[in-house]
Image (cartoon, rainbow, N blue to C red):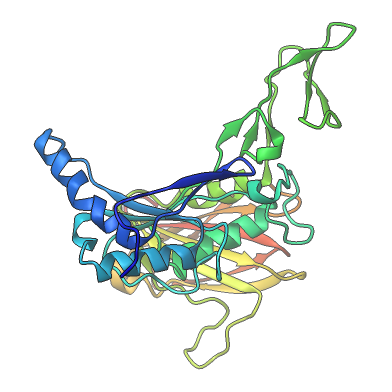
Length: 325
């Protein structure tokens, strides 16, 4: 009672548009939008809701939509991870619909883009971005994680790729300047002028190898037997692509290198035990940027391998068994 329904208000604060509607108001609108889509023949267009500014905020919006009986009119749950308590996933949403993180970047704190992989776990560093992706995929059970923005002219907005408009200095040399006019980059003759941020490399580990239609599968970080403790510095996730390849991401969030054991018990489930398995390895840390390591072949009936993870690193293992080896 007393709830103002049917109105979705916005206001601007510090340059950002903020929704002032709740899940009940969204529930009022969802049937009408679906009816309009159907009447105009847009049968392949669905509704996503509601771009909550943080995980806890979107959880509340979803619960209100469910309470109003309108969840069936949605095809996608969408959220950001900027604000809230907590702002990032602490547990999955109670829904069978796919969940996407549709926007995240350090833009709220104006940290700007950096090429630093790790210094102190700032939001604009690549290692923390990798941890946030891992957390969203595993803890939040999301199926998409979209960064804001891919490429742009403002380094303050922390794009993956900073490509500002060139400016001429007094000698006619092309130059770039950041918004604050403190960062100057000269453009070598005949060279493309852009800078790649460390968050780009973190995203590449996931987006390049986990393909559409992939399913997340069990991954154990830091132990071999069920009763052995997890290593506190290790985070692992694994996915099976439609072509049968297995993708494993392992984050070493510690200050020391770690010797790890990669067990391929998975071949008992998804491939013939007599198949050899080829493993391609890609590493990003403070020294290497998405560097490919020489491929290894694990022979049939030898389903294990030992690997060294550098400190504060992200390592991706891409496993192919059988005919593709």
